[in-house]
Length: 236
Image (tube, rainbow, N blue to C red; front, side):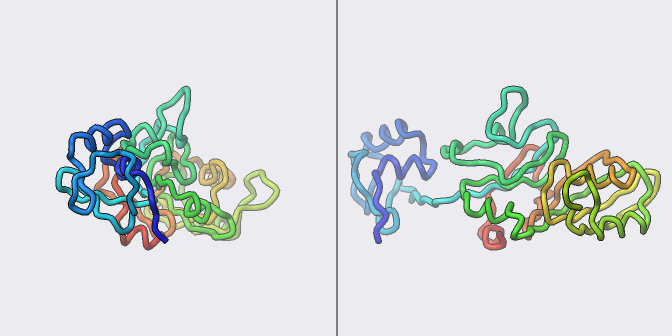
């Protein structure tokens, strides 16, 4: 079945400009549909069959957008906030109002954050029924021993009705300050910090490094983002 929409809406949704900007492009004769100049913003097009060009460049539209964002500390994982800068303040997109962060990272936690407009995917990644594994690099004030590793593996009492699900605690280095990777399959409020607090230790730095099969691109600087590759989207 053909997917029909107005030409100006199609161009705006494709990121070619705002609705008013693309109307101006159309009226100036900058837009062609199947090789013919079109000066009517209201013209109907078949998104899947018609060839739309702006200044001789093909314009394509995808229903969903996916961005990998390296969240820095100091901003909140929200679409808007009256007190703090949000993760969405870093994003530039003509469809920004549709986009939202998948899940949450604490204000002082850094790392991988997926931003999209695909609500079904977001629900699947966050649903407890799917148990998507999330991995975090952390620095801990304290010496990690086999006792803590086993405690994480068995689940911890963090003050809720049920213990946490079994988690994997991998030690990178051990000393007065230890470096670890923690892998969990749920996302309770401040969970990593509360788990270490339950074994008498405190987290001094926390960074999410993966979510499911999606891994943080270490070439990104804090506060930077990029679209996901087709391979990364397939992994999700």
